[in-house]
Structure formats: C-alpha cells, structure tokens
Amino acid sequence: MSTQRLAEAIEKLRGAYGGLEAELAARPPRCWSTLVDVVAGGPKAKSSDSPRVPLDQPEQLVKLPVEALQEALKVTGRDQRRAGALQALANWWPGDDPDESWCEDHERRHRELTAIRGVGHELVDRILLLVLGLPAMPLSRAALRVGCRHGWSGLESEYDEWQHLFRQAAELADSSLPEVWWLINRVGRSHCGSRPRCDDCPLESLLPEGGPYEPE
Ligand code: SF4
Image 1: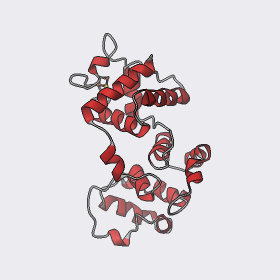
Image 2: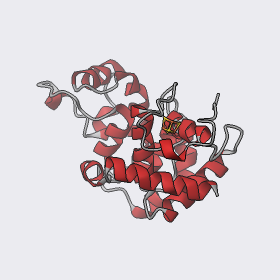
Image 3: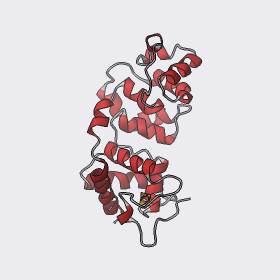
C-alpha cells in the first residue's frame, strides 16, 4: 500500500518537476569528476587557479596538503569541509575507467566507503547510487521527512525496509532510483524542510487525512 502511494507521489513529482535527463547527462557514472560533484557539490564559480589544483586527478589529490584542497574547493564554489573525505576517497578510487566488476561489488564497496572517515551513511549511498550506479537510495533528511509525513514508513523502520520501499516504488512508477532521489530531494528543498509547507506542494493531495504526520 505504501509502495503504491509512493509510486503515485513519484509520478506527481515527475509531472511537476520533469525528468532527470539533463542532470544525469552532466554527471556520468563511474567518473571521478562525478564523485567530486556528489561529495563536494558542483562548481559554482570559475577559478583562475584551477590548473594548479588538479581536482580531476585523484592520484594528484592524495599528495596535496589538505589546506590546498580546501582552497581549491572554496574557489570553485564547492563545499571545502569535504576536503578530508575527498582526499580519502581519492585514495580509495581505483583510477581511470574503473572496472565493471569493481563497481558492481555492492557489498564490498559499501563496506569500504562506510569505513572512510567523514563519509556518513547517506553519502555512502549517494556515491553508490550516483557514481557506481548501484541500487542504493540515500536516506537524506528530505527522503525521511517526506516518507514519515505521509505515513509511508516511520523513523523506527530499519534501513532495509526503507530501501525496499523506494526500490519497489521506483519500479512501480517506471522510474529509476537516481530520479526518485532527485525528485524527493527537490520537493524537500522547495516545500518539505524542517517545517512542511504543504500549500501548493505537488504532494498535497496525497497527505493523510488530518495533515502530515510529525516525523521527529
Ligand atoms: S510539504 Fe507537505 S505535502 Fe509536501 S511533501 Fe512535505 S508533507 Fe508532503
């Protein structure tokens, strides 16, 4: 039942926001540059310093002082607080054109990423989903808030239950997990923050009788 309602929500969000094609085209999977964008955000500014700081070369990044990497992230408008994690990820990254079997070893990649300092559970799944192309739904605040407020699941639910819910609903809505992730986070940013703004939200018609449940 919850799966069906979530599938309906995905369809409504797709109708309101469109698909994900342009976003995905800008971030091809299995690329180091995609990983940089996923971890530290995309570039928001051009830097004349960029040739000196090879953000696109993981083997060079591991040798940099972390302060230099922080500065490189800052001048390109990215999140400089991610410098330490990015450096650890550069050390983990297998190099250009990673092998298909390396990318597809979900369990091992999950284990390795979870062990990296500064890479939390949500970011682990974001890397698995958007960089390695694996079926892992990042349980962001937005995903949990929207899911709990509509009663599709609860904060007491296990990680695997949430994963199952999102995977099944994506299939039912003929969508993909990256698209679901993008749509849910989009509605989270525009309407479903710490306080829900249900008026004019694309999911207003799917609210439980009596309004949204309180997740916290
Ligand atoms: S803002 Fe309201 S209608 Fe929109 S997703 Fe959140 S709880 Fe649902």
